[in-house]
Image (tube, rainbow, N blue to C red; front, side, top):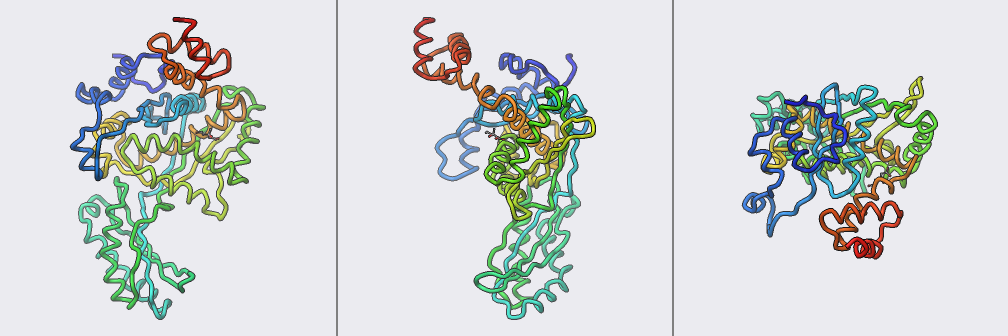
Length: 419
Ligand code: MEV
């Protein structure tokens, strides 16, 4: 049997069948699991997942190679419609490998549930009463989810915030819940709803909102990598990279695009594992604005040898139990490919992938630009649109790229010429 490694050069050149064979071997997939690559979500399952179902909607599932995170090799499944994303992540990981790959850190999986308390006569007195009954409130929250508590999770703390608003002062109670390997929305929302009557009784106020916060700033993941200056093309390239990056630090217009590039990678893995990508997006962007100005989620500097050191820090609220990830067979398959054991491990891969994706984008932007990378797949799509099939697709696409003009009418002309 061939050696199991995520460092696979020329993976993109292999036929799909051979790629599946490599992933099957790497992740010990069964024959049944391997068949899933070419299957669709069955209609009965889809019909139970959302309302008014008519069918299912497919997206490409690719594999990013070369990832070494905390000294462990990973093949990363990515679901995206955007060309170049998977290749860019794989290339970035290859450059990071030169200096040992990605290193990560992760906080405990703490989510925040919010309860909004209105119509309180004496805000200070109500706050006192809530804090005095903290233990009873936490016990009541934990009575809602014995399984989570048995796994070492559950409501751990309670905080009270007083906010001014156009409708007067309000109290916002945060319950801090360790959700272990779950994303946590269900557990937290159930606890919030259970606490509402007790809080109203204690304070004489009225609870309005009771819901989890997607600004999961107690569930933070960091990833770091050193990108070798020689592999990047020398110190001048590192300097050009840093000049490009700095705009994302100071300018929200650039930061939005810069962070979008990060989410190209992150969302594709979140979708592949059946997690809620809107929750991750909301958390990431809110966190990027935590100091009052929207800014970059990554930071870069040079080390004393002139290599580029990249870091990312963001909230990652994802789970490996419960939710759609346990219903959709392909999401289960993707988790098996990753070989993850905990939600923490998955969140660390998410952060490393986000950093890789961002490095790749800024590296391309500060050197050759991103169009070059986009060209070849785009050209293939145009060739197909022009009517090319089989071997014709590559011939037409190559000619379009060579001419530097990827246009449908030109593709049609080339197709006529080679027919
Ligand atoms: C495109 O999907 C993402 C980029 O715009 C990200 C960036 O500009 O950093 C290339």
